[in-house]
Amino acid sequence: MASNTTGSSAAAAEAVILRGPRPGDIGWSISRQAAFYTDHFGWDDGFEALLCKISSDFLNNFDPAYERCWIAEQSGRNVGCIFLVRQSDGVAQLRMLYVEPDAQGHGIGWRLVEACVAEARRIGYRRMVLWTNAELPAARKLYEGSGFRLESEDHDRKFGKDFHGQEWALDLA
Image (cartoon, rainbow, N blue to C red):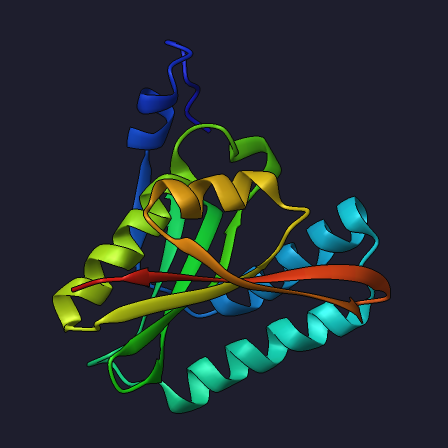
C-alpha cells in the first residue's frame, strides 16, 4: 500500500481514484458499512437489511442515464463509496456514503460528495436529498460544506437504538 510520506491530506486524497463499481464492490459496501456501524454505534442488523435493500434496488433498477456509484480506491484497496440514485423526476438522492476508518480525514469523503453533486447537476437534477443521523458529525460537516441544508428531523427507534434522523437537501439549479 502506498504511504503518504508528506503527511498532507491533499496528497492522500490524490492517491485515491474514483471509479465505477466492479463485481463484488456493492457487497463490499454493504459488509463494511454494516460492520462499521455495528462496531462504532451498536446498530443492529436492521441497518444491514436497509443497506441490502438500497443496494438491491440500485442493482435491479439501475438506470445509467440517472444513477451512479463510485468506489474510492487506494493502491488497489476499496476505501470508500457513494451512490447517486433517482428519487423522482428532477430529484436525486445521495446514498450510502462511506469511508474506511483508516482513510478518513484525507479528503476522500469530500471528493465522493463533490463527484456525486457534480454528476447530479450534469444529469440535470434540480434537487438532491439525503438522509443521515445527527450523531454523525463528520458526515454532516461534509454535507453542510457542500451546500446541503437541514430540512427536517425526527426521533425514532431504528437499528436497535434511539435514532435522531435528519433529512438534508441541496438545490442544484
